[in-house]
Amino acid sequence: MNKLNNPAATFLRENGHASIVSLGCGRWINRIDNHLRLMLELNLTFYAGIDLEAAIDPDAADLFMDADSMNSMLERHYRGRPEDFWKSTKFFPGTPIEELKGMHCAAVVCQRVLPDCRWEEIITSMNPKLVLQEDLHGCERQQLRGQQYVRSWSKIRQYGLKPFRPWPIFPGENNLVLWQRLDFGNEQEGGSKFRWLERLCQSFIG
Image (cartoon, rainbow, N blue to C red):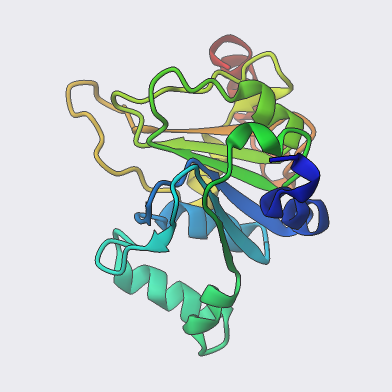
């Protein structure tokens, strides 16, 4: 399919600046608590799910890990009409990730990425402010270090991101990675007295 005729590329060309994009979202949309937190914290309008699967649908039973908290968040954000969230969701089945190269967006999510799926070049071409990778055990980690992105621990805390299925063998292993574009600043971080230490860690770890 030519990218010009790709509905996902057309959508992102018009709305990417206001969208969080879940790459390889799978047949069923589930456990999107952190995705929703990022979407609302960044004041984005759209949640886009993209996959090669022939169909993409929400998994009503497992949409959220903490349904009460997420529904309360939606209730506040949509002023008593949490169902309006579904007007903001756009799903694009049958779409190769490779055809999104150069289509800008505000944030990217990679969840349970299959082994050998290397999307670094595509992700960086989309120029997102933040890239969230989660549920990483046995999955492919995208390495964005040295490509104008650094790992951010402060934004994990700031946005209240909560890992699921952490591996207890390694203390502090959170089963998620949040990458921050270097020019995506934060006034709160700038005022932290330990900001210099985080910058030093970022320079070594990513």
